[in-house]
Image (cartoon, rainbow, N blue to C red; front, side, top):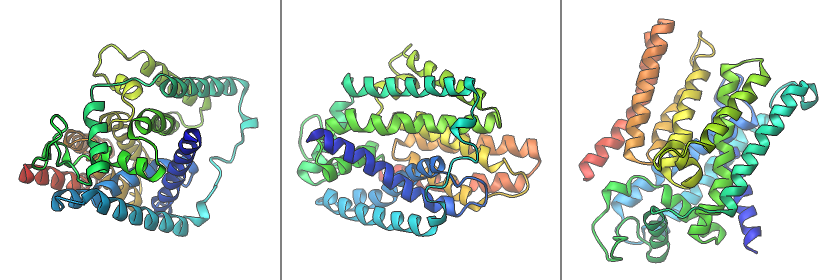
Length: 350
């Protein structure tokens, strides 16, 4: 029965991300209307929606906050999924590229199978050999307390007693997302974190890496696969410290900090590559998605928000120098406004 629940949770998460991702896809005039892009955009939308819906509830409701969050977040997901399907109905199941697998060279096919094998190996190992972590004590305990006591960040995980709002973590709602998914599919939070989340997040991260490789090596499929394989190998052997991004990716996949380093930051780079692919126009849809990425980074931590905004400003200035377009850089920097508001809210609430 638990296997059925895990499969249902994985399929449902992928379906929701895809449907929500169709909404930003429909707003873009560039050639980004692909299944893979919709999945990436949809995860961004999901995290941004998590913060927009969840933060007011966390700050304003001392009691019954989790119950209200589950209801509000469910409604928001249904609305945005329906909007995505409606506005992106022309892009549903649109093929990835005009070429097929049969047209790949033998070398490309070999690299593709090696890449898929490496990803499958990591997913299976994370599923079978779940690594318990000291942060299980906080992340999963906070999620369980939300479910059991119907409050958000108002119980001290060290003592189990009621306390004032834990503002240090209260604006980073990734544990509450896991509590929500756990409640919907009736899977224990710890099992969800260590079994379900890696199945979704590991392939999604490599999908993003591959999309970046498509922009770095256009029309060179072999190099795209090689680049993604190298990143794969780098992550497997990146355990030189317990605190590296690679270690977080495989041993702490279910934590917001891992999502920040292995999805949010690469996603910002990918969005910039898309925005500057066509030097004549700037897609309003991509600018909106960049702002959503800043909001989504808040689900990880306040530090992730500052890093995201800093990277956006840096990349905007670099591209403005290369292309000599100050207006585009200003528009990109303006996407950091949600991050500034997030930090101000953090400071004021503290």
